[in-house]
Length: 290
Image (cartoon, rainbow, N blue to C red; front, top):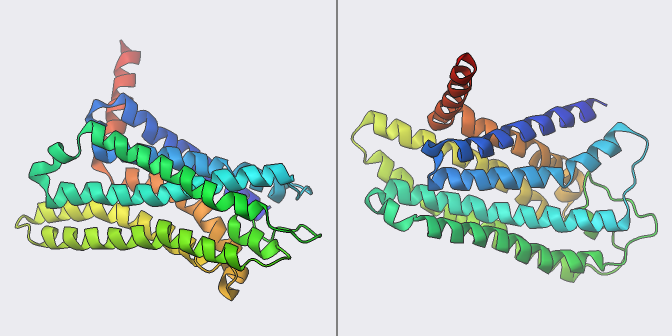
């Protein structure tokens, strides 16, 4: 019940926080920039990502029923894996946006035009569809053991591979390759981009300018490390001793904790978001007074 209450509170914070970001982006013209466009996409992803697994998780934690149908498990796997893959690519796109803003500020409006942002967003969602269509069907075709007990909080690939009775070497190789493409490659590119960003920021003469740049970029880096480190530990080696023993708790971290922290990190440390909230509340207050 302690875990049920904790997950419930985290899910409510996730729903409220990410919904607030989405509404602020659509209601406040000051936020109609590429940075907040991609942040809104991240909020939509987090909302869908958590909703695909947490309600079922709460059912299992809060009552005696611990079962899920084969179809329900398959649907959860397809959605969960697709949205996770999309988030990996989205974090890379957000890093590219910060790279252009800090290292190529004079060309920012030229490079990050609205049609370019929409194409990048399409690439994010398309990559998620591609990732799940490659991995999910082969996972669900595995010969599962007769006891059918998924040793995890959700139906995800490593847990289902461990459940299989037959040979899973091809599945393990496939998930390692997919994991490298969607995890290691984006993470490497993000680190390279932030290496260039750090060099550019350190060259800024103004102390205030350096502080503002570091504050903006540090929020994104926190989200990157929280997400990539936990997911990589589970997906790169699905049958490793660490994945079997600690995998379910890491799964709980990137399905519950990280989506909860994302809106808090981006709103509490962001002056633009706090300003948009103040303008929205002030507008509502003045309207009520009139």
